[in-house]
Length: 322
Image (cartoon, rainbow, N blue to C red):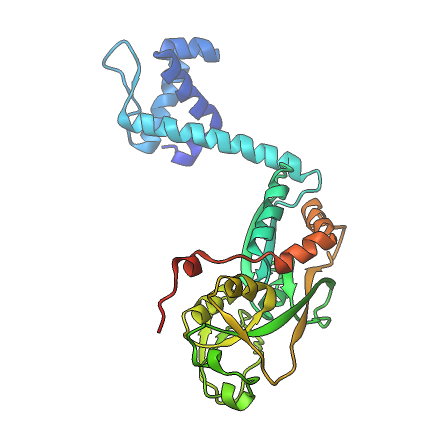
């Protein structure tokens, strides 16, 4: 007995569609240039392999059963998928990658990133885009292990990774921010590390699985750890703790009165942000990666990626105040 894989071929699915369209086995046979007995035999093979009745033969009109109608519906989708795969293969043969995986740090503007994705899709490229988020050394780890093709928002030099290519995006400056009702919001003098140690710090976990790093922590300080920079902002807006934030990300919350910045005695911290990719071991860059790297060379794009930040829906809805 044939298996379902033996009988569910593009030709067989097209044959079933012809029967449904013409309303009879004889008419479908004429349309497909088959003798009626050959067409009937093939339908019976499919029914035996699937163990279902595909057409009701009790009337002169060939009516698809419920199972037959389900197969016709799925068959149309499968034939469309086959056509799409063939089209994609032809396009990939021209130099486009089948898939491009991007990973972005939380300091990267999501709005600007989505603008770039939208512009890329307008090219009608066959390349599928996967977008992931990472923090601290996480993006570089994904690059080094082959799980990403391009990282945006790399805060370390990372020259020790073989084949890693790095280009500057720009600098980000960190400010100390708290909710207006947080105790540290009322301090009139620059906040010392000794005073800061008395309050909970909101920190972002490093998304790397191997070597992890932390920034700005004081020994013995109480911490509340979250997974993303946006979660850190939301936590600070709610007064769950305090912490340092990129000035461009804190700005809309300060302007909305949801956060206030306070001076601290420690030196102002700046961090050079970069984008990174791995040099191909053989051959040149794929067309998709080349397009992204070209966009990232624009100073306007670089500035937007680091500065075009907006209020989150959570913040707009209004935090609970203590």
